[in-house]
Image (tube, rainbow, N blue to C red; front, top):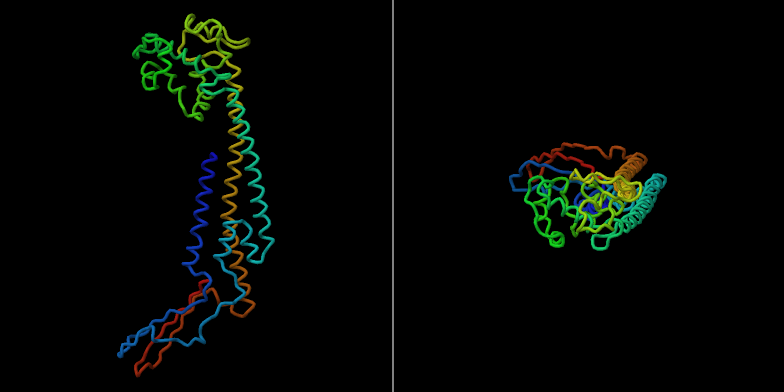
Length: 332
């Protein structure tokens, strides 16, 4: 998972936090149990609302009980805080420690990834400010293929000069290029540029400075430039289209990019643990409050709380027999 996806999940979590209070409010998790009543029709037009039950039979909430919704919300925002709210501080320790540790790991590896990214970008240079990768050298090799009616694989042959070719948009250059010339080195997307030159060696190997001899002169010797690479590097075979020489610079650059990506991946794993920790802590806080409330009910002699109860009764109301079914429904 990349950093942008990890931050995307953070946004989702923030939305959940923003919406959670509204859901908890609608659920009314902190109200005491209520009774739903059904009465037979009264000849005088008496409604259900008029058939008021004896308030002495209602079950009141224990004031010491905690709100499950609040506990879950607290831990969803700050892991461990819902457990503290429940009064079980020892349950908060692992969630809080994991939160702090995961953020520390994320910051450490994200910082290392940024530093290594700066290093490999400086090592290669940018399209218009080259260092060890020369965009102009690569374009010359591309131009030679596009101008060769045999090497370009039967595609339309380019007949202009090199300077004009380098200024053409990709959709026009591409018409004269066979595989593996499938990506545009003149892209304005820096991330794409740095990825391409370190990934597609058969195409972009031509641009690394240890693969050619720039002293020969680009417009005079053609692909002979790549027949005289830096010491210890294999020269390109001019009989092939793709670059098949050697380049220590390319592999050094590729390893730096790989290390940067490895750092980012470790940081993103830590961020995934952060997200999971928020959710697990919220669930644990809800269970912690639920178990604490049950203990209060048991100790207060109302161990039947948390169950549905049905009661049937029949009374005379204004001379008519009214039948009542009372349902006790626990909401916390």
